Image (tube, rainbow, N blue to C red; front, side):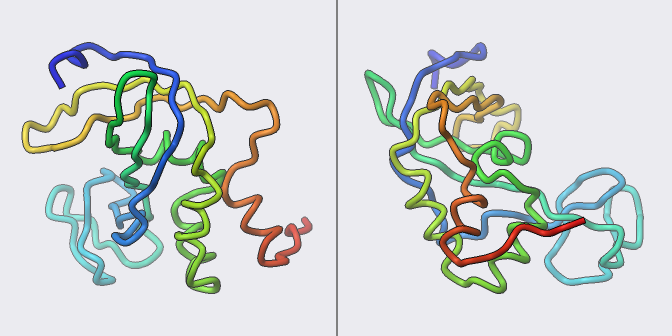
Length: 160
């Protein structure tokens, strides 16, 4: 990780995604700190009573990428993962409840896609993986995973 002391931009291909672990976590809607998965928990940091309406899900996705010189595992948090998935973590969570294999299918859809990623060293000293702080698709016809999943499962777009 020494070479990633400063933010570094790489061209890469997604070669895998860890979908066995949850792709998202609950966070307080006020301070965005991690919450336990139990509903109505009190946020330890801002003391917000996190009834279901005052909490949200944020992405935390471990992705394996290949650059021209190495293979890396990088963590994509909410802003970066939204580019890959094309929706909020809440939306993907609810979609996955209706379609149990959505996470594994999303991994298959994203495998082989090429991106320009800006990687940085984690600020948390306990963290193991580089962070993807920016993700830009390189293929002009790129479709986020949720669009391909909706086509695959025959889900019609919502009408307003």
